[in-house]
Length: 188
Image 1: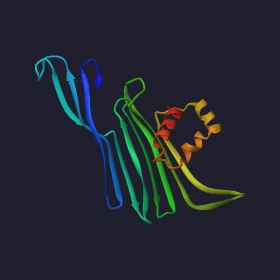
Image 2: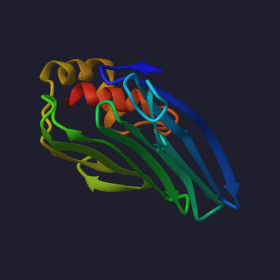
Image 3: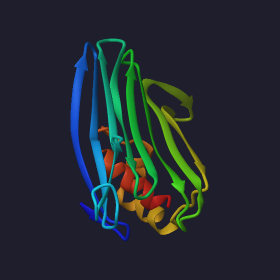
């Protein structure tokens, strides 16, 4: 239940998952939502409106031995108009691709607009000798639009390994909430 100026919101939702061969899928908080408004309406002094509650999160995992394994999760927070996601897939057990990011569909002041930040990395490939004692173990990049960074958080991140966790996270699907929090803090 969530009271507001217009009435009381009620949600009935569930989480479910299924497996079909090498694929597993899950949904989180899908169901029905209702708004009870206390004015003349369809139930006399109360107006009730029902609607579909789309899932707050969707997960997918694949385990096709020797070909591809991994998975990801996409989360939506309607209150902040934010989407967050994490994906990690190992291809032929020779290359691991990881991506995670945030998309906001409303600006911090509440106005219309969007911002996006995505990190993408590739690692676990055979090391490439670059010469002069340097070896390439992984590559990555970041794309950001309408985002900024917190200089103090990034400076502290050098000391407490927050940057290492963002640049090359370990088990990003399991650690998704911590990674997304660190991303939102470092790049507000």
